Image (cartoon, rainbow, N blue to C red; front, side, top):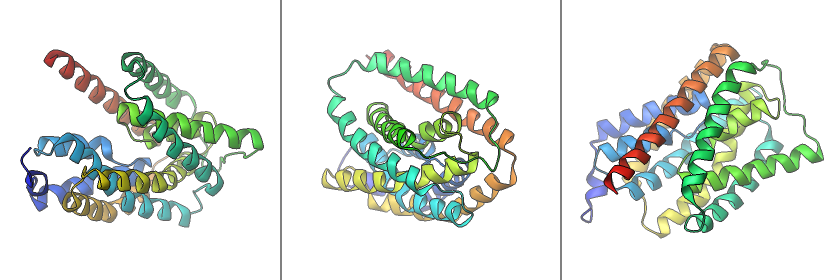
Length: 262
């Protein structure tokens, strides 16, 4: 891509519209919104590295706004979020190191299997709104290890941490759907800062794109949060399982496209 193309790609209206959709999904599901932002930026003609880097930068203000909204309603577990954040930052670094050293085919299909198991579990385990994470020394270590695994998978497969963390907190740690989403957004803040600083050093982001998408996403995030509170845990799980199915289809399509080109 010629110099300057990334910064001129996408009209302000298109980027703002994209940010509004991503922000709503972020507030509703406790995810970063990259599952929508990155493919849309690619369709707008943005280079893939710039698209990923700009998406991560846009997630920072969105996750802060979303985590704050959930925190104000008492739906953030601060200690669990800290343990996850510590793990995911270290895991992301390890994932970057392993990127050229592990068989990605095996990892890809293991992750797809994980997605299937999680989608099924979301229809079996329906949390109660007053459920909370039981923190013990053992569960704290398990949370940190979960963060490490999430960071590795995020780096290797290019998926956001929220799509992994939210169902795990519900299924394995007994969190309510709202606490899982709020804690997931809190966890994203340090990870996004770390990744954005790295992408900025490598010129892998467009501040223009990140600003348009990130600021508009902040405006829509509270609406997603209100929707999350308004719907029942059952419908929350049903909607999240649909999002995970969309992510799985997107990853599979991307893989098949690369395979056909090869």
